Amino acid sequence: MKDYLLFVDTETSGIPRDWNQPYASRGNWPHIAQLAWVVYTREGAEVKAENHYIQPSDYDLDPAAGSVHGLTVAFLRENGESRHAVMQCLHRDLTHYQPLVVAHFMQLDFHMVGVGFHRAGLTNPLLGLPLFCTMRATGPLLRHSAQGFLRLPELYQRLFKEPQPRAHDALADAYAAARCFFEMQRQGIITDETMRQQGPPVGLPQPLGPARRLQIGVAPWLLVSAVLLVLLAFWLLA
Image 1 (cartoon, rainbow, N blue to C red):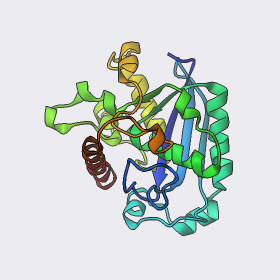
Image 2: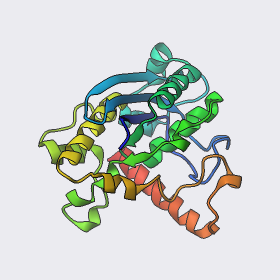
Image 3: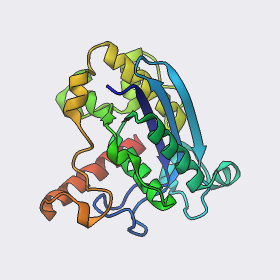
């Protein structure tokens, strides 16, 4: 495992319309409203934490998304920073620490961070770093096979027998994902082999558009998109 781990979480203005579209596709991808990350050593010692809101200068909040995370346009205008400054800060930490990047529901955070780098005119360091999704590692904790995966509050409750503090706040979620990761590692649910086997997010297109996409047929992509949209809708509204 890497010397450092970076746990990242995003709160967004909405959900993607089509997961197959390149990041430059206008109106397809939502915007990051809040971006937070926490860096740890491999032994579990916290190194630093960052929490940023992004100015809504070129986006509005979908009411459904706002009802989940509680952010408002007025709050973001008062507390937000420029997208470029926020993404540059994350870019600097990813480049400096060269961490294992961890998220709960990595498929969403991977793409939202990638979209953020694209819109800020920055390269995407995630493309050269190992990734791990704690949601995809929850299989051994499921009580019945039809459940699929555990959402972060469910995983937190299952592991610690207490509610997750401030769910759907990006910084709180990043801390919760970190606590869950290290506890699952302590219990032997997450191992070096588990991390090697999981690999990068699956069932999603390459982030730079059609020329970089995986060479598979159109129909499978449509099916994957539909499944992911249903999963994301459940995630946001549950």
